[in-house]
Every structure is written in C-alpha cells, then in structure tokens.
Image 1 (cartoon, rainbow, N blue to C red):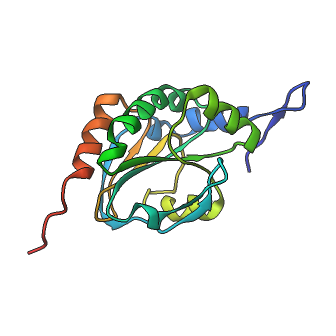
Image 2: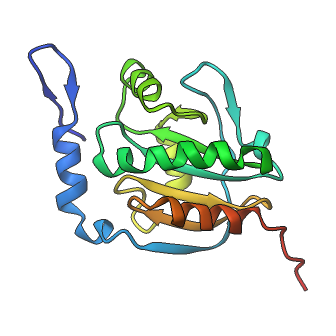
Image 3: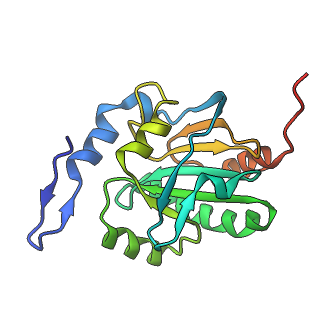
Amino acid sequence: MTTMIRTAKGQMIPFIAALLLFLAFPAAQAAETASARASKAPAFSAVGIDGKAVSSRQFAGKAYIVNFFASWCPPCRSEIPDMVALQKAYKAKGFTFIGVAVSENDDSIKSFMKSSGINYPVLMADQKLINAYGRYVDGGIRSIPTTFVVNRSGQITQIITGARSKAVFEKVILDALKPAKAVK
C-alpha cells in the first residue's frame, strides 16, 4: 500500500508514507495519550535486529514500552536519545524499551541503531506484530511513533501517539514499575 520513491542510488525513501502519516491523519498528529483499559499485552516472539531472540515471555514480571518507530521519522528520531538514556537508567530496575522498526530494511535500521546508540532490543515490524498491538488503537496503528506502556502485570496501561519528552517517558516508566494493586 505504501508507495516508495527510488533515489539514483537505488535506495528506498518512504516519502509517500511519511507524507500520509503527517498529513492524512491530523487527529493522530495531535499526539494525545490514551489510557488503555487494562488490556493484556499481546504475546510475541521474534528475532531482533541483532540476531537475538526476543519474546514477551522474557519480560514477565517486568515493565516495558513497545515503541513503533522508523529511522526516517523526525518525531521518532527526536525521542530516541531520551529512550537510550532512560533504558540505561531503568534497566536494572526491571524495565526495558522494545523498538519495533516500521518500513525499514535490515541494513538501514542496523546503521541507524549504531549511529543512535540504541541500547534496547529492536524488532522488524511484521504484519502479525502490527495487528497484535494495532487492535488496541481505534483504526490500528496509523502513525508513528506509537508507544504501548506495559506494566509489571503484563497489562497495557497507556497508548501514546506521537513523540514525548524524557520527563513524560520517565513518569510512565515509574508508573509501570509500581507493584500491581490487588483486585478486591
């Protein structure tokens, strides 16, 4: 569905996709944070860009953020340095980011990860993973970045559309790390 433009070097530039994401969905650009209705996060299993297996089972009892992004997306690029810093600060406390690269090829995302210093697992988005998380968003994942906050109980507690500041991410991380409340 996404139309690509080829450069003289033969590289794919997702120009039309970026244009659609930023112009066709102005409501998504409002970058509002939605509270999820305590939905169980979907199970997933994939091989990360680094070749290591990544499974949702690895994160049982931990808090994590699943961030759908692309290296060519300016808002995505702007929040990655904060994610790298927060990953470093909170990894030992039972938290991790999981990046899901959309509309990328292995070489471009590997290069981007290296130049950005990404220190958390990154998966290539496939339709199964997009659909698994997209069912929690009205109309599916329509723009990037789209971020899903998962608490220690494995519940999606927030869905964030659009880039966020380090302070906002830190607040949602701290909330996700809180012990689960007993149900009465």
